[in-house]
Image 1 (cartoon, one colour):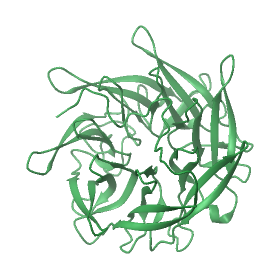
Image 2 (cartoon, rainbow, N blue to C red):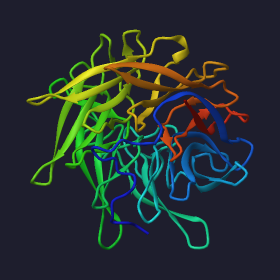
Image 3 (cartoon, rainbow, N blue to C red):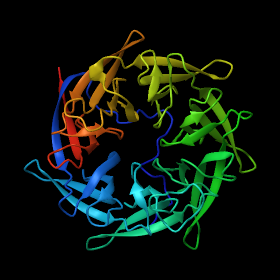
Length: 425
């Protein structure tokens, strides 16, 4: 059950992701939709963001599961009484993957696609020491009458990349694109890849490595891509690397398709110490005029996370601006997950919080632009009982509510799926 059409998971140039009809949000109220439970046949430690289907059901992944322990894909279904019911769609069993971590995507036929960091049949230097396997790309297809069938589309073997940690994205032709955190070519000089999976006429998928990131001082290339990729309207891909670049602190890169079928990489920006942010760990988002936005884990003026903008310059090149540096202790440690816009141009994101916390357990924030100055509003702070360590991107529903996950906390300590209702004034 594959679709050759454009997936609803594609992020295109000019699209304000998560556009909603509201203008301003001043405070917020959280509702826990599900407490993941280590004592039941449930997922443990949801990772990545959530996605909606057309009927309003939510889908996501957990790094672990109570059944086999290798992770799960879950669905949350709303009821008329305001409660949500969880169903486990698939429990991974090592041979088909371990530790699903990115955000899922749909095709237009209702099939789900995602990646696992480890597991599968591939082997090689640099693959998971804990459980083995270099990771997989998988598809989940709904079955008539109920249930889902999983198909492993690709097993990584390190030579062609290993440990995909981000999500996937479709192009208009039904091809899938993603990154691997390590692997590709020679282990001594390549640290991560950008890959394409193309469906074949007779069934199956063909993998092509579009770019091998090179860990050396000559190319000044990025290393260890971790976040999701996005497309612009011309078919160019954009992403980030945690390390590498001219100073070793990470990059923003572009991959452009060439006439001969190859792809050309351009490093748009190399991060450096000194207040501009370092180690971008998640994906990017476009605004309506072609500027890119993202976060760094460290390196701001207070050695904390930053939110940055990259703007195309006249005559070529890109200019970086730090929009906000987190400094207040209540801001929390590291920014996690991709940012999301509302229709008014405000940015929303999550801060991870402290490991093993009781109070400083993470935060949902909003950034607003007034006359070129960006200011932060702390919309909601987690306290462990209602969740801890939000680490995925956020999404909006049509009413302007935000949804996401925490990897820990909640009443059972195994993480939560949550809704943030924004109060409008």
